Amino acid sequence: MELRNLEHFVAVAEEGSFTRAAERLHLVQSTLSVSVKSLEKELGGPLFDRSTHHVALTDAGRALLVEARHALAAVEAARDAVAAVHGGLRGTVRVGIMHSLTLIDLAALLTRYHREHPEVQIVPSTAQGGSVELAAQVTDGRLDLAFVSLPGGRPPGLSVHPLATEPLLLACQDDHPFARRSVVPLAELDGERFVDFPAGWGTRLSVDRLFLAEGLRRVIAVEVTDIPTVTELVRAGFGFAFLTASLTRDSPAITLRPVRPTPQFAVSLVTPATRRLSAAARALADLVLSMFDPAAQQVRTRVRPGRETRGGR
Image (cartoon, rainbow, N blue to C red; front, side, top):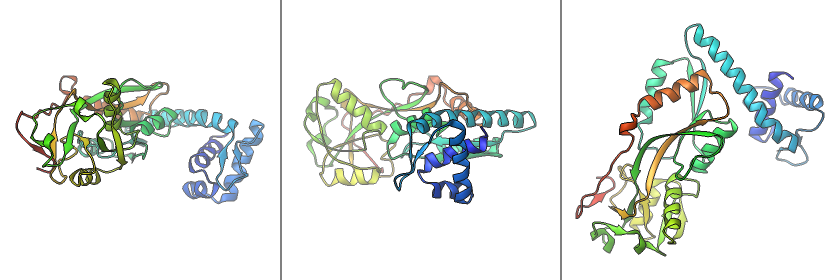
């Protein structure tokens, strides 16, 4: 079994297409097809179902994909280790990033890493499925590490390193009665309409868990994937939202109020617990953790009674 065959197989599996995989690998499609067929012949069975326009993995293909990613990651780690001995880290680090990650100065962190390890290529990516999808991609090897918000437990196969937390505040219209309250009891939001992010996003997970624990319900009137749209819908009276002060720093004015009990937005770094990181990825993880002293991991955002807190001000 040759490494290039595994690389070709993984590319087709991830792209769901021989054509797109060939473009990604800078190969002609016939060469890629021959490589995959050679691997199938060696393993004694088909790895892809080619009966549809979208190439799908067979059961054997799904089983191989996990092991192929691990094997390629191990080879990359071996190359990185030798490169480090000869005077510097090289390779690629695939980093998952939440949408609107404002609680951490990620740009400064990555700039410092690039300055210390200029030969390493950092490939950031987001996911429409939010933190849940990013965590799954770290587990199966598509990402080396990721910044996520996963309240309520440690997913299997991952190591979770807490970095910072911030309270989620109730966003409402300026002229709503809640805007004149110093604190809003969570129970008073039972049955209300909300504008929220998709189910896999960290803020949504935190609020959903708290409402469930308190025996309350809320109506998700609409799901959106960006902060400006959320704030505009709140201003238009479409519903309430839960946001943090840092998320609304550059948004149009809306009133934010603390609620009791308070949902929390917690950012963590997740790394694989069942496979070894490459030297380049391990160096990035070490840098992240070194910049967050455990004694200062919590960002405390307090709203004094009687004072308005508005996004964008």
